Length: 225
Picture 1 (tube, rainbow, N blue to C red):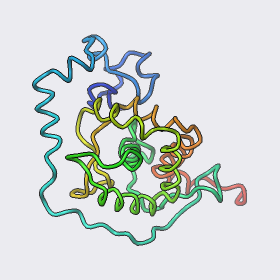
Picture 2 (spheres, helix red, strand yellow):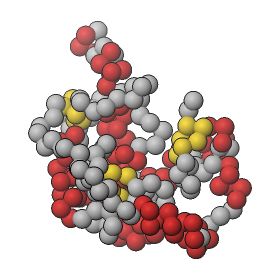
Picture 3 (tube, one colour):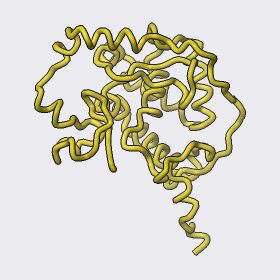
């Protein structure tokens, strides 16, 4: 069943829980319950349960950190960006072999590297390691970070953090003990990435390629035809 994270409550919900208009908004769409409730950020921030949730989010993982490899990773060209963009070929694939409805696993660490350390979530050392790890998976990562900083995304730091809700994202995909980043609303993630349209285009293309490698490998190239 097709589902997507609501941009307000961040719950993964089936398409039936969205109006047609909200579903067409993609990652920025809100579920019918959130739309009908008419809640706003001020009410949420003043709610005792929400404050308790935020405190729970900031409890850092205390177990042993997931082992990391910073060795070079095999790469493939991104279709349409041959010679300019590559992605690693050992990325965990989804069952359907296509990108998930929400791509916070990639978007959030990228924005974390842009805005810098966040108290209770990640420090400068963890961000440095995360940047190295992601650059091995997506070599354009450092360039994206610098471009988004120049586009003014770092200046939105306080706004992004203040509006964060839901479960934090790990700085490194599927890794514990290496820092987290508060979960920014889906629409705010997209808006931040699209501060630099070219970066957004490249990120979207790379994410699609990461999760669609089996399908791409099965598609005959022009040279094979």
